[in-house]
Amino acid sequence: MKATKPFSLAESRRRYEQLQRKLSQVGWISEGYAQDRGPGAGGPCFQWTRKLKGKTVSVALSKEQYEWLSVAIANWKVMKKTIKEMQRLSRRVLFETVPHPQRRKRLGKKVLGLN
Image (cartoon, rainbow, N blue to C red; front, side):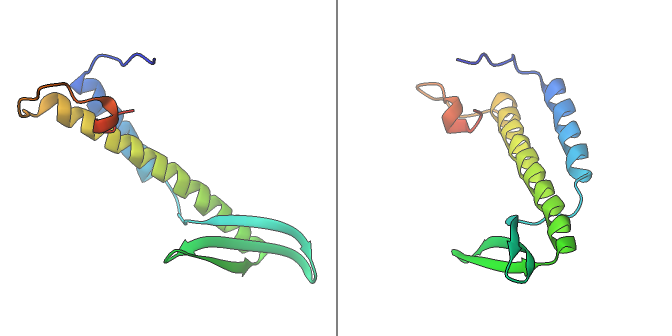
């Protein structure tokens, strides 16, 4: 089992500010997947696929659009990962610093979303 570092509000604030700076440097973003499907019937075939209202939607792309979207999708993944860490850190600060009701047993990391 992985040991958790002791809680430090100053360290948490410092890390949260780092995450904010990282988030502010993210460029253009897009959901979905950009694929190079190789040469097709009429030449190279680039495609962007995403979910829209539970259905898969695909759009043909030019090579330039494919390259641009590939970067935007990578940025989207960085942004999602950064926000997830910011949420986890926010919850840890909340449950370590804000008064809470009496509990019979301690809340676990899974319940608090800290793992």
